[in-house]
Amino acid sequence: MTTEQKLNARSNGSCELCESKESLSVYEVPPHSDGNEDESILVCEVCKAQLEKRVALDANHWACLNTSMWSEVRAVKVVSWRMLNRLKTNSWAADAIDMMYLEEDQLTWARAAGDEEDSGEIQFHKDSNGTILQSGDTVTLIKTLEVKGSQVKANVGVAVRNIRLVHDNIEQIEGKVDGQQIVILTKFVKKS
Image (tube, rainbow, N blue to C red):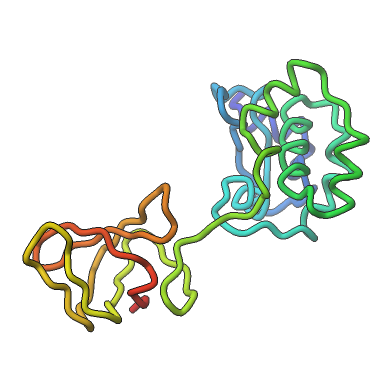
């Protein structure tokens, strides 16, 4: 039996966090999951996208944690604790954290993600108009830029195709201008 089949049986074919029955898939709980059912949970796409920080948190969706935090499944408890900590600015989540109990090994696993130290907000790369940028997008320069350390000038109106996001700085993207790879500040571009 596959991990997904085991998780389906364990959860009665529903998301182990919000109990949705649509678009279910396996979520391997980081950081040390080897894909087995003890270190994985079955989640819906809405939960998974927020768990993986691909979309902003929807606090209303996570009211389900008031139930899932009491699960007997270690991985579900760990993920519930992490999500409650990402939502701790909401009074209901802070109250739930105070009520929740994890064994020492579960708490160590839960803390490995560092969610209790974050505000829970996800920062996105945004252009000058506030539009979210993604790798592969095309942007247009809204200001003429001089490239440091070269003679290249990136003129206003130039399209930069197939951009890459700078992972550790939401104010920077990378792209090619006149065949040269450069770093561009997001405040000087608009998504095309």
